[in-house]
Structure formats: C-alpha cells, structure tokens
Amino acid sequence: QVQLVESGGGSVQAGGSLRLSCTASGYTFSRLCMGWFRQALGKEREAVATITFTGGSTLTADSVKGRFTIARDNTKNTLYLQMNSLKPEDTAMYYCAARSGTYCNLEWNFGDFAYWGQGTQVTVSL
Image 1 (spheres, helix red, strand yellow):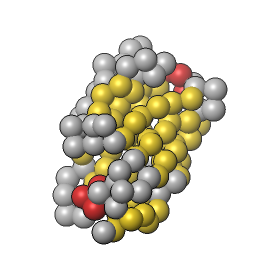
Image 2: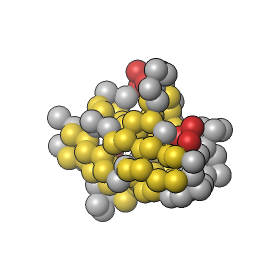
Image 3: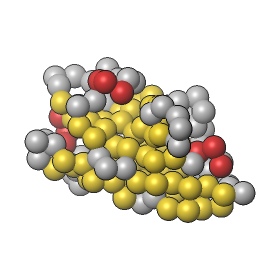
C-alpha cells in the first residue's frame, strides 16, 4: 500500500516562494507516476503538475507555468513542487498523488491516481 506524506505548506505573502515535499513509502518510488493537485475552497480539485518515473518528462498547468516546477529524487523517495512568485489565487490545499504502472503518460485526471496524501495548506496573502 502506497503511503504519501506532504509537507512544506504554510502562509506566505504574494511574490514569495515555498517548496512542497511528498515522501512516499510502501512501493518502489521509481515505479510510481507522480503528480501534484490542488483544491481551493469551493472549487474542484485540479492538476498542477505531473512527472514520469525518472523525472525526464513533466507537464505543468498553464496557470502555474513558469512559476512552479515539479521534480523528484528517487534516491530519497521524494516528490517536490517548487513554487515561486506565488499569487493569492494559488491559495489551496495541495495534494500529492501517485499511480503505479508499467509506464507513465503524464496523467492529468483526478481519477488516474489511486493514491493520495492528506494534503498541505498553502495560503498566499497580498
């Protein structure tokens, strides 16, 4: 059973930076397709970024492109989301997600991921 634990959220002023981490256990991390999603209050959960097994390919939402970077360290079983130039509209609960499989196709849909962390809150103020 895959377990995911996020950390690194917090409160920051607009223009600031945060780095989220997600540590995985219970499965060979290098065989997990990984992603970050977020859900703002009253809104649907949306994909932020996804990454393949080795990190060689990534996909990032247009709303955060150029500001957020997804990365992984398979030696540390950890997924990262570097968030720069944060805006108030980035305020949300951020979730780490994983799926096992024989290949990654930069999945983007909520239903594509079987495993989820508990979330970490990011709040951006003016």
